[in-house]
Each structure stands twice: as C-alpha cells, then as structure tokens.
Amino acid sequence: MRFQIQREAVLKPLQAVVGVVEKRQTLPILANLLVVVEPGQVSFTGTDLQLEMIAKVTAEGTTPGEATVPARKFFDICRALPDGATLTVEQQGDRVQVKAGRSRFVLATLPAAEFPALEAKESNDSLTLPQGVIKELIDRVAFAMAVQDVRFYLNGMLFDLRADSLRAVATDGHRLALCQAPLEAREGSPRQILLPRKAVLELQRLLEAGDEPVTLELGRSHVRLRRPDVVFTSNLIDGRFPDYEAVMPIGADKQVRVDRDVLRDALSRAAILSNEKYRGVRLEIAPSQLRVVAHNAEQEEAVEEFSAQSNADNLQISFNVTYVLDALASLRGEQVELRLRDGNSSCLIADAEDDRARHVIMPMRM
Image (cartoon, rainbow, N blue to C red; front, side):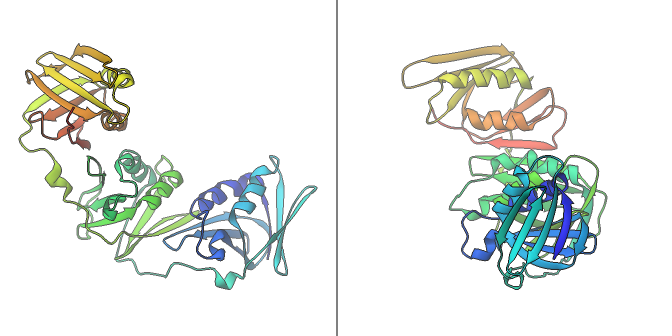
C-alpha cells in the first residue's frame, strides 16, 4: 500500500472521519482508521460500531492495498506538517511510514482484516435533496436535544418524512424545536427515523451550506448519507419519539409580536441578574408593552420595558431564559410572535411571517 497526497487535500476528509472515532474504545482496532488505496484514490474509514464515516480523496503514486493506522496520531501528524507539504504514505510490513520533506514518522498498525464494518443493510427508501437543506434543519433544531437523559429516545433528533415535506424535531422534555423544509412530491410512504445525538452532531459538522445534492438512504434500523466524497452511516435509536404535534399549544389565543433583536437583547441583559441555578425571567404582557423582570437570591432585580403588539392584558409568565434565547437565535425573521393561552401553559414562539420553524417552551414557577 502506498500513496502520495498534499497535506491540504487530506486534512478535511481526515478531520471528518476522526470525529467518529471515540477517544475511549472497547476494542483497540476502533482507535484506528482503515486506509484503503485504489488506483488514483484513497479512502479513510472510521467507526465506533454505531456510526461509520468513509471519506474519499484522489491521490497520486498509488499502490493498491489496505492497512489501519492510529487515527488521532495520523491526523495530528498531518495537521502539524507545514502548508504545502506532500505526504508519502507507505506500508512496510506491520508498520506504516509517513514522509514529508525531511520529516519521517513510523506508525504501528493492526490487521485490516480485523477492522469492523457496519453490516451492509438494505435501504428501502431514499431521497435526494440539497445538503444545505439538511444542514439548516439540523442547525435550527439540534440545540433542543436532550443530553444523557434516561429517556434515551430524547437523546437524538426525529426526522419526520412526509409526502411533501421533511421535518426535524428535537425535545428535552422542557422545550421542543421543530423546523421543516418543503420537498417535491415523493412516492414513498410517510415515515419517521430517530438519529442518535452523536450522529446529528457529526452531520452538523460534515454538511455544508449550498445546493450540492446528497442522497439519504433509509433502512429499518439505519440511515446512510451519500455525497461524492463521503459515505456516512448511522444506526437509528430503537424507540418511540413523543407525539410532538400533541405538544403544540391548543387554544393559544393570546399573541405578542415583538422585534426579535429587541427581545433577545433585553433577555440577555435581564439574565445577568437572574438566579444562577434556575435562570428564570418573568414576562409581563400588556396591550402595547412587554416587561422582562429577573430576580436573584441577593434580592437584586433587573427590569426591561419595550413596546410590543399584543392582544393580552395583565398576563404574566416565567421561563428559563436560556430556552427563550436559544429559540430566538434559531429564528430568522425581524419580528417574532409569542402565542400563549395563560401563565401556566406552554408558549409557542415562531417568526411572525414564517412558521416553518416553531419552538414550544414550558413555563416555570418563580
């Protein structure tokens, strides 16, 4: 096995693949990358047995073969080399030698035959769409995923594939984020898949804004994303995601329309004096005014007042300020709308002119 490649050409695919490799492994081989050299091309594969990333890049001076190399060490070597360096990677017995100019590194290997590959699973549905669409859905929803919740099905993101739209939904039990993108009419039946948190974060790093098409292949227990230079495969969470549509507030007849930046800045300032543990702020709503009030254990207080359009009078409701700020950061419009029923029910936050993205936040007691 042998190939030559420019440092800049190999860094990006290596960075994508190394992200999949866990720092602590149950098997020594999982700390390695599988390097497969074919005529004019080299591919790098990393896996943790739940996710698998294969990145391909063109190379010169190729001698076909395969080997495994320590993932972090190989990536750190490439990253530490000077700009414009040309790497020559060559297998010598049970070692792999990496040369660049006057630098030479010899890495230990493990047998390529022992490298575990995710089982080849059949996909029963697929769709092709711009990668920028998937990236936007993930970026606008991912913050609401739970982290190590005992309700394991919350530690991920739901993709709800419908006849004419794709929805991404995440919730941690206290808040819910939803964003949808229109699709051309498709023949497949509606279905839902539940991606684990790590897969979502890796896709967030991997995908780029733009119209380059990617293909999503959906199986019963896995999802696979194909791009010309990358194949990403992830097992799915085997669990039932909550009925998120039932969480949407019903009968929310109180509406508040306000400038998004004004509300965000006011909340950020008031949060300085909120309780460090509970992070609570109170919204006091009047027909043409919105007040944001925060207190803490030292009896300190912050009050922010600004104009707002509202059909509610003397309505008070409290939230975790972080949840509201996260929702506002995810929205895009200049004006946002808060829809409420009363001070004890959940609140829906969306762009005033576009409800493709919606956020539901549960109130808190102060």
